Length: 175
Ligand SMILES: [Mg+2]
Figure (tube, rainbow, N blue to C red):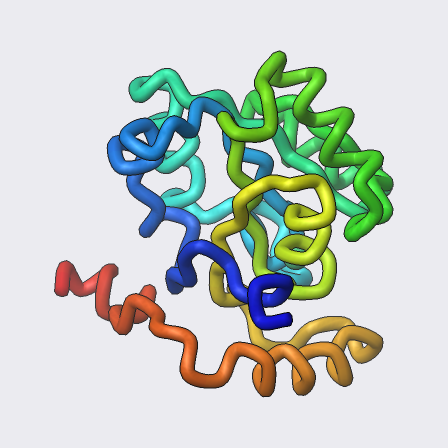
């Protein structure tokens, strides 16, 4: 059962994902979540690290597409600003949005990876489509109230999962 809940890796921040090693794993496309993965809850703009990370993807010939359950005009504005295509109102963990993303990327599922901060939408949704997944820590710990019970269950399911220990704060200090 654990296989359904455990991502292939678990990192503190999207910018910890190294495109060179993704390419070595046969990945040419990244399907990335928006809220609390690229932009923190209630923040309006992506952090400079996120913008830089997306720039690196181009350099490594990895294509990025955003798949989000968010359907607001703001989500589209962020996608435009980052110059990445978006599948909004995706209703993750349902497979529809991920399948659409694969079609837009023009890639088979073996060549793509899902990146997100939630086990029950991003990781399980990826697995329902036969995609690999990378879990990131949520950018902001105060989620909307309705995700809180799932966060508790998530913590329990992830217990003992090895994770890169460096925090974003330490990375900023150059550690
Ligand atoms: Mg999220």
